Image (cartoon, rainbow over all chains, first blue to last red; front, side, top):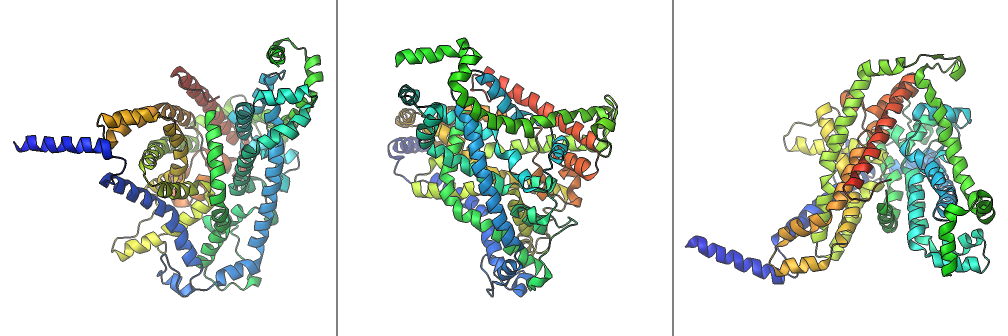
Length: 309
Length: 314
């Protein structure tokens, strides 16, 4: 009897769910929200903690009493970072390298994607293959290292720029975009009006490709900004190292022999612990500041890229 | 217009090079730039691969070094370091896939169920963030949090009376931390593709199911999941094709002597033997082995995806 009653109640619940599911807030909604909120906290708390640590006093940090709120606020660590100058220099240097890289990268990308997006191009398959193959097979570290050595690129700022400005992956995304989003008829009419291919590119294709240009520029910029392995492979001179590698040497590699520390001239008063937290924040803050504005472009790029590749 | 269109579709097969060059020379000029770049920076490195058949000595160069046939490869398969690096790479990549692959799917399903657009948007923005941080930042933050004595996690544990945990300095703990940080870094970003796939599922299906009285879980199980099955299969195959890859930066930032046993994967082997110990031929042979197996896996993955009726990867 009781069993039957239960079944009836369950039935009633099911039907009401069918008609009212849209407005009713249920426990499962709450659980999902709590779970997602907790995951979000794992993305935020580490940085709040480090930020708090970086502006706390040495004694508070040494006493391990700093959690998510700074204690005895002081900006000493940042002052010594800025006074020392190497991090600031490195930041400016990295911005310049990234900007040049992004600009040249977009030029190389467009030069490949535009012709290859044309079905009528003779030899299109061959060129596509030649330009895509390096994505699937590369010669590896040592042959590449020796090649760069032969090209006099070792310990040279251009080794951080030239080898990577042509990216098959980005080219593919741009090509897909050009093929799917720009109607052929537009170009054909321009062609009939006597426009040359260069003119079509400059006056029609590029203005219509602004969204994808924004997205790919960001791919290039963030890719260059974040990578440090090539710094480690090919660069020896301190002034040619990008900021990520500087930070790497400072913090992540406690065992690395050539750990860079700030020069004594800066009269560092902070403990390494606070200084490291400040350095991490110094490198992270720019990304976090511009990130919300960039995110939507990235999402778009992933969508276009998902069509193929 | 129609005439021109039929004309352009035919030219591909009919036009001679002379005609094509005359009409489209501007295209070929543009193509020169990327072609020169790949030739100078990628293809020019391929001849260097011949050192896998040599006992390459940096001082002697390619011309002065001796040819040794397959000796390097024979040595490679007997090299305990190589076996260890290969084993670690495969094990960790499979574990990465096992732990990391389902997470974006689960998250996408959850995000899809959220009723409050604002909450959804903020959640997504925050969850995408780790993807934009470099491995250096992720690694140094993790190091700060997980340090044995002064890291906040261990401070909290000690305050609660639990013994401090060597998250990054003991190999088994390291393995778990390393994998979880990998999941953490990719989970949010991975949802984008699934969320896009979910939006393409017809709303009528959900409405019909709701009229039939299907609850949330039933709808998820019988409509949403089948609706994104194609995407899941494609991505899974694609990821299986990459199981030989290893990310040097991720391994490098989390590396230390105590966890060398597990952290020693192919990318680390290639770097340490090559640039560290100047065993150029050996390092290159391992790199070549990795590239070729990786290429075969990607091609096979592409074939399988196409056989299953999904869009290929290449």
